[in-house]
Length: 219
Image (cartoon, rainbow, N blue to C red; front, side, top):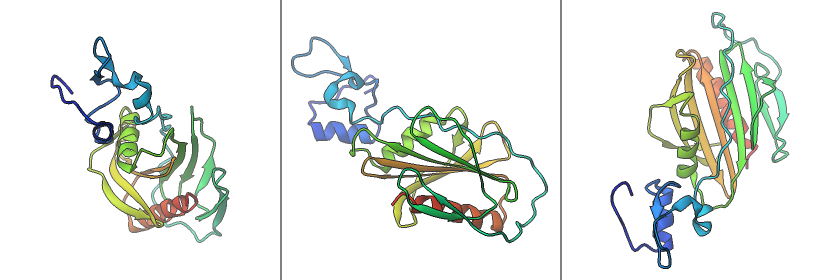
């Protein structure tokens, strides 16, 4: 790893190092029978231990910036998650919008009243060996060109699901705070990517309500 060599290692030790990202797909490995060092990601028996290529979560367009006003009381919106068929109840201030993705499933919502945008995403992983930490770091790498995550991952419970959460800023909209929450269950990986301009208690409460509702459809 780097300029250092390690080993020999057992398969469990190798998978642990992959999980902690000390071995990545570009790391060179060598085993008995090999004439020379080869790239780890090209080894068939290791390939499923690495995070699969993830679709780039699209960064939503900039929403209008009216002065923040508390949202009027409106009937809730009932949505059905096409992945699980389960329903979520969210505030009617959230309006579903079309979104393009190059893999997996992604659903985009805008709340002009709360100056917020949200992406709820799902991927089916190649194996059930990837945990929250590996998936979180894979997503962080994918969005790095658009979003700067500047906190450590912290463990949270979202509607009963063990998850990881970190915050950061948008590189294209400096006034937008970003919150990324991820959770893996078996081969199902879920995430919410929240963009909020402002930090009022009403905005934070609505954000938390939305995230909890979305993850409620994942169980």
